[in-house]
Amino acid sequence: SVPTACVGPAGPMLLTAAYLPWIGSSFESMATGFAPSSLAVSAYGLATQSLPLALLHAAGLPNCDLLVTAEAVRLLVPAGGSATLQFAIPKDLSLVGVRLHHQFLQGEFGAQGALLSLSASNALALTVGAF
Image (tube, rainbow, N blue to C red; front, side, top):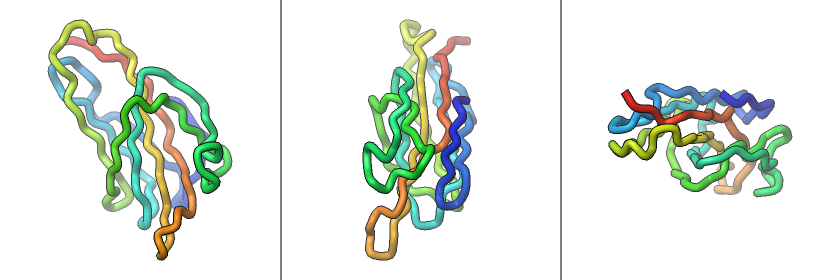
């Protein structure tokens, strides 16, 4: 886990891996701490970075950074304050040892649909394995 000092509108968000990335199986993660009126963006890529969210949008909160390169993103709707990402890892031995970096972002929206805040969870740094 890569820590963060970011605190969103409902408090800190926590990202954990429910199932690790093994070839031929599915990777699954869960982020908790979403505000009721928010959307989740799952970002995952092949490297780390430290980009303040305020550089992406004026609603970026202090100490909130995008900690992963975003080669792939998914928009998710949190339920009960949490969001889950799942995707298959192909059964290909050439993927063994590949580093996967993953993080959730949270966009909190107002009644009129305006983006009120942009915050982030911790990040995960994972290695694809074989068993």
